[in-house]
Length: 251
Image 1 (cartoon, one colour):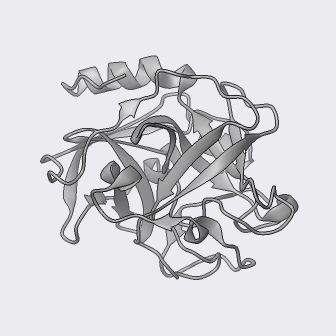
Image 2 (cartoon, helix red, strand yellow; image 1 turned 120 degrees about the vertical axis):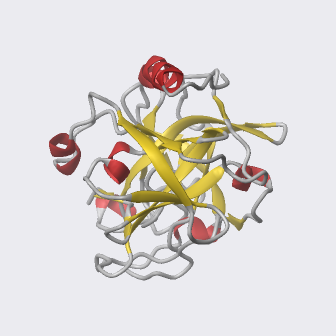
C-alpha cells in the first residue's frame, strides 16, 4: 500500500520491517550526497528531508509543509533555522495526494538565515528524462525499519533503479538487488521530500523528490517501491519561485 514517508515521532504507523535506506551507506555530514540534505521539523512532531538549492533555500515535498504549522530546518542540532516563507506548488492537491493520485508534490522554503558552510547547494539536474534501469541516488534522514524510530535523523544514501514506465509525472524506484520481491533498499518514514539525485563523477544534481513508499509487492511499509515526483514539469515554477524570493538557482 502506498503511503507517505513523513515521520511522526510519537505516532508511527505499524507496518512490516524493511531495510529501507539503512541498507545503503551512512553518509558523514559534509560528504557525498550528505553535502546537500537537511532535516525539516514541524511543530506537530513530523520530520522530512530537504535539499539545499541556495544558501537559504530548500526544496522538499509539498505534503511535508502544506499543513498549517510551524516548521524549522535543522542541520547540526537545535534550535535550527526559522523559515521566512513557504511556497507550495499551486498544483499540489492534498486530496489527490491522500487518494494516491499524482500531484505536484513540490515546495520551496526560504530560511531566515543562511545554512552553515557544511551544507552546499545542489544543482537542478539538466537531464529531465529517465528510463528503466537508470540509477538514481536517494539520500535522507528516515528510519531504518518501518514502524520504529531506528536510525531516524541519521543521513544515509542508497542507489536505486528506475522501474516501470517513468515519465514527467512520476518515477518509481526499486532496490536493484531485491526488485520489489522482498524487502530491500528504499525510502522510509522521514525520507519524504528527500532528493533523488543523478550522480556523475562525484557530483549530485537533483532530478526529483521522494513522495511515497510501499512495502514489497505493494504492501504497506517500506523496502518495495519508492515514489518520486520528477522535477521535469516543475523546473520553471521552481526557478520563478526562487526568483520571487530573491534567489537564482543553478541548473
